[in-house]
Length: 169
Image 1 (cartoon, rainbow, N blue to C red):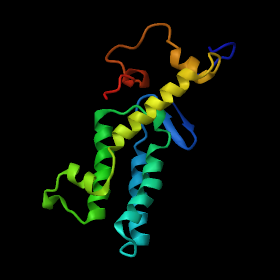
Image 2 (image 1 turned 45 degrees about the vertical axis):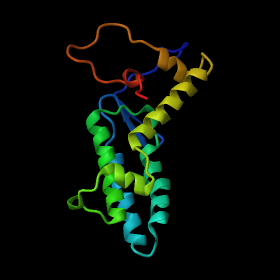
Image 3 (image 1 turned 180 degrees about the horizontal axis):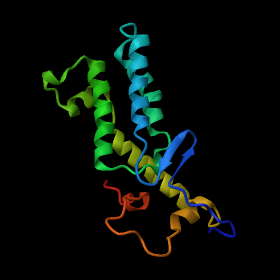
């Protein structure tokens, strides 16, 4: 209950086209990211230089991947999936295969790409600061400060957004 409004508790809901779940993040977003990369390659192929393809990728695919990520709870496996998807595209962009044994750091330096997980964490940090600056009567701020009452279920608790607020710099 926030103010006098009773807020229904649900396990998942859709917000701005993105499914937010209590227990797991939406990995379908990663599939859309890979499809967008495929569309870029099919339509532009060899007609466009690498810099322009990278700019289109940063605007479309990375933008779609980061959309709604301010409330995303990332587990280690999901972080690895994000990095893998980015590196797969960058390797394809440069024409490098895994057999070439080129390190990911070298590929990122050549393309000027940033670590997608760090970008998402910075985005979350900005969102947290934004929510903390809000008035006390705003629902996002009240939801951030809210603590459930009663007993929790048996076993290890699920990783929550609140638990990952301790960012590594």
